[in-house]
Image (cartoon, rainbow, N blue to C red):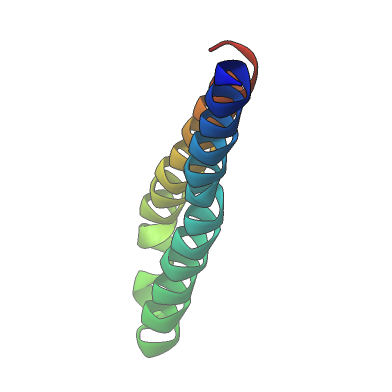
Length: 78
């Protein structure tokens, strides 16, 4: 009985950690939307902000990958 409770806790924790993957997708959309909004307002400054766009996208994706890794660790390693 106790093994089932521990396994249930692992799956609950993995599900909560996987929420971060969905939130990372929202973050990537937010970064891209803000870049496009700024680029449409001032097209001459859009080229200088491209590097900042890619850095923001990379950080948002990294958080999603980390949360996915935590979910996998909770499911299979703990």
